[in-house]
Image 1 (tube, helix red, strand yellow):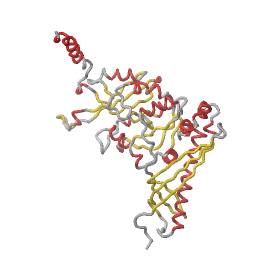
Image 2 (tube, one colour; image 1 turned 120 degrees about the horizontal axis):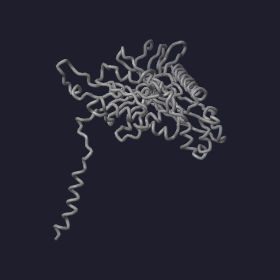
Image 3 (cartoon, helix red, strand yellow; image 1 turned 60 degrees about the vertical axis):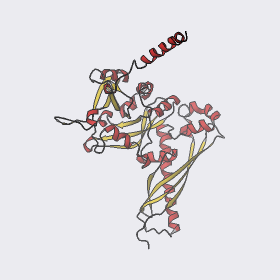
Image 4 (spheres, helix red, strand yellow; image 1 turned 90 degrees about the vertical axis):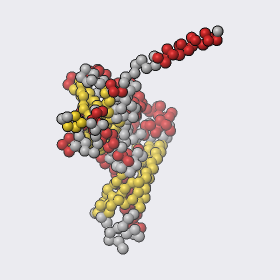
Length: 384
């Protein structure tokens, strides 16, 4: 009797286990995508290029005609990313699989003319897409960059992904922006910045430098920040890990290597529609290079060097603030986000007019205060 009681649940359990893998796809049947490039095509269509790995070549196996390329690029043109991806299944023996996608490249033309929220809709929705996939804007055609043959890496995607991590060494690269970040910006309708990448096929190299500025209202590219302006923006947002700042003292060049950075924002909201921001930037670092006859015992000259760097940082940051307020009218400094977190009731009142309407961001006052501590390390020429 007891056996009969347990027979039905046992049978159901077996059935469930048997149906658990009904939709599985064998790993050798997948087309692993490691990078995506999206360009604007004629008639406002999209040209989508996927970089796929060739597993046999990655295992250092060779064909009779010589070593195979470790990757190949597959393109299709359609009105949507979804249909372009489906069309690629007509020409590839392995359907595209996005879970290993590391990099998403958007061309400058596409970013200026199209709403990237619509363009990236599939990648945001698709459960296969990695939320950590890095998104960048390309100078020129995006697909061209995926054709660069790097000298130090096997795959262009690997080369781009590794180079994008270099903000730890330089301040002129915008910190990586992944698909999850972009999704959050789009939901908040907030302006944001993305890294900028340019390709040089003849030299087998890429260049990551600058920032692409997107406005939150229409999700379109407003313009670019150059290397120094990007460093300035990164100083204001506190995202710099290490960078070098060059200036002149007594007509000779000196270079300051930032090792530590602290940034603090204060806001005076006594007049809610005209907030005043004070940004405190404190840095510690080393004198990286000097053409002066410096002595570690000459405290007055050391102090003058620190003051020179402070003036330089204030000048740099004030210039990028003016550009963002007057030219791009886009808050990629995080000031609105600061108000939202720390003065939420006031932010609810002014948010509709922050970047649009009365454009309160463009009219608010932003003051930068800088403190530099420079250590003199190593041997110094012309000093006993």
